[in-house]
Length: 413
Image (cartoon, rainbow, N blue to C red; front, top):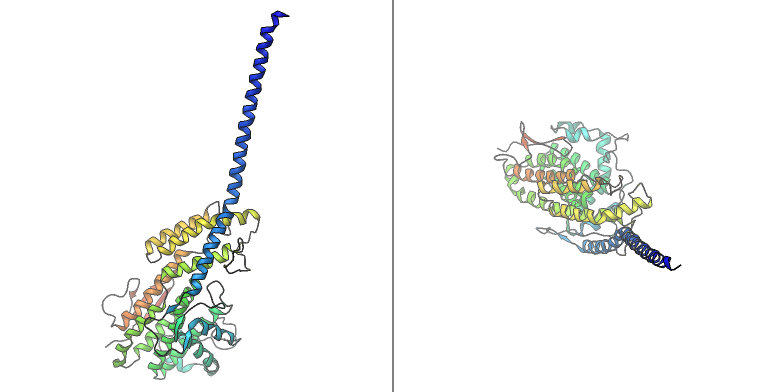
């Protein structure tokens, strides 16, 4: 048996080495698997950790916005209200259940005022149906008091009126007042009461432009109201006695200050959208709770994908807000935000939640219309503001949807 000892010893060493290698391989595999598990766990947990941090920041932003006051610049002489938004809330509480035909629904027996509002010749106002005139008289007290909310010392959010908790009839009230005022101004001008018509049109514009501080939705409501009222306000201004016209110039400038900056509008939109998109998935103390979940796909993976998108979305929205005043830079940031929404890491029903570039164009056009009102009242000298085109005694512009809008320029001699 002596002859097998070297061979047996060799086999034993080989087995020992093989066993050592196997243990090392198992150890490496164990480490690799452990690392994979740790990384996978981190990958899954990180969105929730980030959500806590972003939720805390959102709570801070909400608290800051709640405390913000927008004073009048210049101050309103003898304001009848302290807080314009508080006044609006009070008026919504007593809003008539039916404000037709000024609600724009067109489903009532009362004549639609559109034909008398849009006609360029004020003569059609004299043919206004008696029932339409009677309906306007019936609602006039409430509309007058709502319009008067613009005659306030400042604006500040109240619990019942914030960008993330707009009352159900908020937009209906603003646009109904705009339609009512359009008809009212035409009637006053036709009856030779141009100064009263101009004052009422300006007061309504002041109130509706205030709504731009209610985030992107409020800004779009303000923009729609301005498109409707600008031709009527200029019509009333053109009917003023020549000596009174120069006295209105400062008023147009003051009106323009009522409209929020693009930077503020998009910054408010970031906070508002964060509340609606992410708060239901990651509630945080100090952040208003909303019951409405914008996700149609509420599976666990869909919720996780949205939370994972929050950090990138928030950074993009902040960049969009900073670039909002520059159309070129804003378009780039809006495209980057849209690309984020279209990525595979975002659920399809979360992508493209808003066309921010189109909204930005509407904000720019609102500024252009306000500048055009100042240009016309200054004598309409030289070329109209960029974006406006002179056409046969009027200026025209296309909105973000390609629709053409016209403002007649009255004779200025």
